[in-house]
Image 1: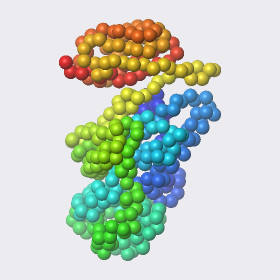
Image 2: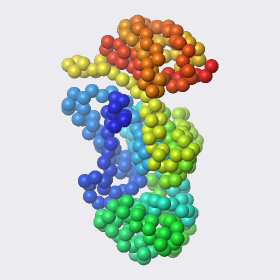
Image 3: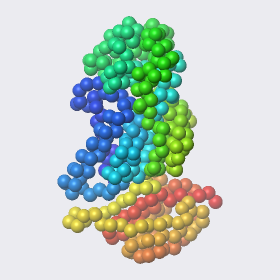
Image 4: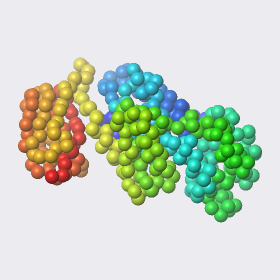
Length: 371
């Protein structure tokens, strides 16, 4: 909703097994996450074409937690399989479990205390539903005290939150602490840990979404105090992507103090700011369609002095510069061609620069450097 308010055509896919769709939701299953989102993007474009909703070709991708995993799964599909259909402009996955076979696997088998046991156990149930060979049956895989809840969840009789609560309570009662791996039978855990080709290990590897090289600018937003999705997912992904040759990938620390829930809002704000660097805002004439916009070059950016040059202004109009609170700190008319402007001494920081012309509006970020 926040991105839609900033002028983006926003779509949020309802993944398999969620909402009105029956059956087990294939949790952190990269393939279905990607094609469901792809299909919704196609539907959105068709709807826009059928209803005179004018959109450009820019594509921005983002999502939080499992949505972060979905974001990278979709991003990879669009760039590797559909480069002629969608071109990703920028991507900002947030606090997602990108490294299933390493970071999340280590969390599962380490015997660590983890207060969301349902999420980890759901990974086994999900991959069993998708691949069919992760385990033989619930009775031979999960310890007896937990089988009724897992069976009920697998049969769509209880929700994930109900499974999570039931496992948490019974782990405390039976084990004295919430250690999800203790829900699994010891021989099954031993098989998973000692057999690199175990079906569960292979399923995890197939659903990693980080070992590739994004072409579009990518920011992996995270908080280091995240207690649900270890922040190493983001740093491992950054290292792998850069090693694979990605030119513009960065893991961005939102906060060293915020947990998974509290990290979401500031991560979304940072994402919107990141996207604003690339967003092209155009005006349309309902009878004539989109009005083409020219190239706008703002230099220097970052701004280190008081002199700002605008190049490529297509017609007379006006320029405004606003701080991140939305307060306009500079306003000036502009003329066709190149414009040399002298700005007041603006404090160091990030600003929104907007040029409004008769036929279109362009916005971009202006960084004022410390002096």
